[in-house]
Amino acid sequence: MTTEQSTPFNRVPLYIALGLSVTLVIGTLIGAKIVYRKAALQPVSMATIDSPDAGSPECGRFLGALPGELLGHPRAELADPAPEGAAAWRSDSLSRITLRCGVSLPLQYTTLSGVTEVDGTSWIRVDDATTGSSLRTWFAVNRFPVVAVTADDRSVDGDDSPVGELSGALGSLDRTENTPAPAPLADLVPGDSDEGCDRLLPALPETLGGTAGYTRVSAERIGAAGLPAGSAAWTAEGAEPVVLRCGVADAPSYEPGVQVQQVNDVAWFNDTALANGTTSGTWYALGRTSTVAVSMPQAAGNTAIVTLGDAIARNIPGKPGAR
Image (cartoon, rainbow, N blue to C red; front, side, top):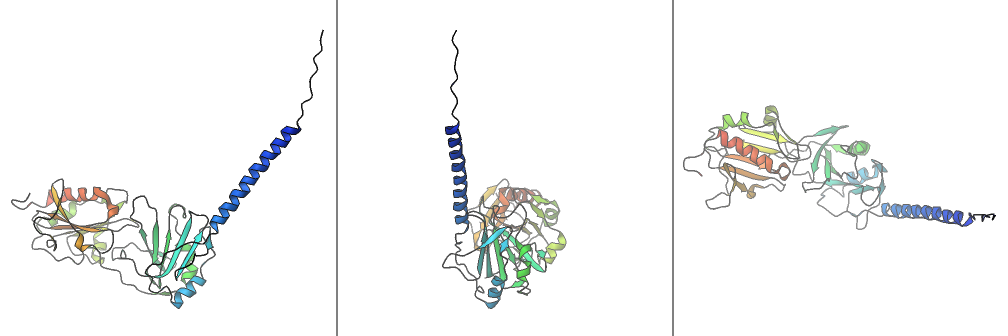
């Protein structure tokens, strides 16, 4: 009969290996934190843009009053050459908020703009029209100099905005009454006919399809914006409005033989000569007894032109012999 003898298990190498693994993990985490913090502390590069009042004493005082933290992001240094009137906050290489003082009023600030009041400052939001971009800029339009704050989804939480935390610093700037630009199409010349316009206006939809969420504005707001009878408009936060005018003169740059686009039963001419420097183009519905113009930004999408064209086709007769 044999007796088996067990060999004692030496746990020391196991403990050493475990200790080395834990040390390696801790070292990796510390190293990652150092790299992360080093990236977060890198100066922020900002390009020089048209900012006519950036070097003003008012902007100098305003920059000195800015908070050291904005929406949880610490204030960052600017890389040389730093533009005048600029500031930035960042937490890492991707999350940052930038600010510019002394910029020009945005072209999107019109009598149709939706203005948000925060502690006595009037803000409008302008979203980047680039597909896939979440960049948006808030402009303080009733302060001198004008202030612009830019951030994206990585820097703000949902529908949050950084403007509320800037109220204290904005108190150092004077309030002013900047005049908004006219609403799109407000300056078009009336045409010789408005046949069918009385039927078209009530038949237009309350909302326009697409991702921007355009909603039709009231008749009272149309009048307050300086748009004449025969006009309708749809707005969405951060986007340029869609504006329609029925009974206008033909497009000044239209002539036989130019390129038109057929969308269902309506032929459209895009008059790029009327573009005002924004993303909007002016489209004219051709071949109808009354000419209809539509100011259409890129954010509205193709669904809007289809929807409006179908309403035009149903309510404004085609000209005899028009295709």
